[in-house]
Image (cartoon, rainbow, N blue to C red; front, side, top):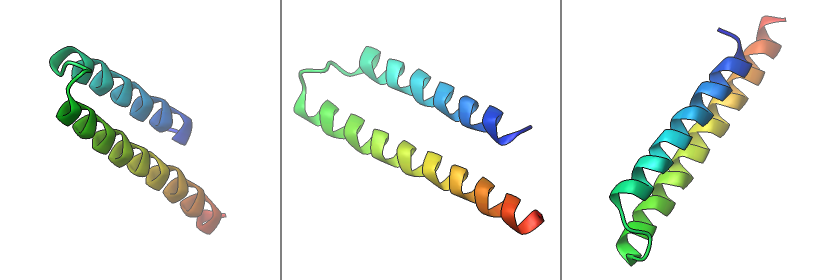
Length: 62
C-alpha cells in the first residue's frame, strides 16, 4: 500500500469519526466542543506522524 493510499485512508477515517461526533454530540454543548477539538488535534498529530514517518523511511531506503 503506497503512502498516498495510507493518507487517503486516514483522512477517510477522520471524516467518518467527525461525522459520528456531529451525530452523537450536539454542537452547542461546550463539553462536546472540547472533546471534538481534542480529538481533531490528536488525529492531526497522528496524520503528521505517519506522513513524516513515510518521508524519513523513504529517504533511508534510497
